[in-house]
Length: 371
Image (cartoon, rainbow, N blue to C red):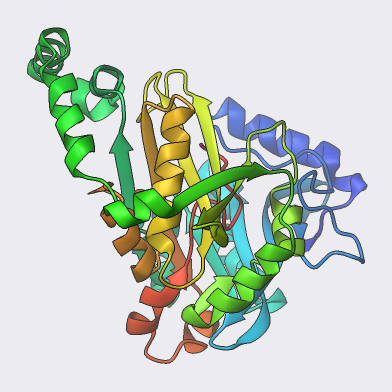
């Protein structure tokens, strides 16, 4: 029976459930949505940002699928429709008969929109980004930054510090003796934004992005070579209320709106990296050019007040990387990759240099699903 890749319809749901059952029986944790319409970004005629689901059918069975998120992007001075490709799932991970299906799914996605990217994927060294690289995509990790706020909980929960007995003992001694807390207090005192930034910066939680968001986008967008359109209508769609997880914060300097950030603060339970820490994450930002440090500092102060044990973020744009370091953060190893399709790369002349001025964060792509 011939494989066909088609839009996901109600008639496919039972077959998708059987696919998920076969994957689970083989010990895989991946699964495809057992619904045909996105809960987050449903396809309606009035919306620019939507998700489409596609499946690979073979007779009465489904052998895989993928998701495309359609979204307006600012690319070198003009707006284009770009797609995020995610969850390219193939039965080939458990059945050699379908080992080439993953490649077929990726190529099919590019026929629907050659301007595509993938984000996250567990880092550039993982199988999917390496496969994309072989297909001519540009792949690299998006830099990761962190700020520990509670020494004891940071040291005892950060999983890389728990891998060997001597590490666990050193962490325990540092926590019990107070050495860790004293050291972190000094770090936080010395690693912080300049005084003029700290004194001028204020913030307020907002329910929705307002006119100020459009004004900031108009001011900031020329600084980006590649960036999702961050006008108010798009931001209000992506970050509409989701049980209060996405917190929208307007940042001012001397009373004037100069930027915003979207943050989360969640208590983890047995997380593979963060253990049981309360993790604050900066998932999206925008600022009037030159005020990036104000926003980074405001986000640090906000999440500290929310009781975070650690703050994390991934930032691609060079000005934002500089700003987050200026606000006192540390750079760490990243497991969050960007893969850009050949056609998307061709939109950026001298890609290696221009990608430094692109903006990608955890809020882009499929969103901050693991934070």
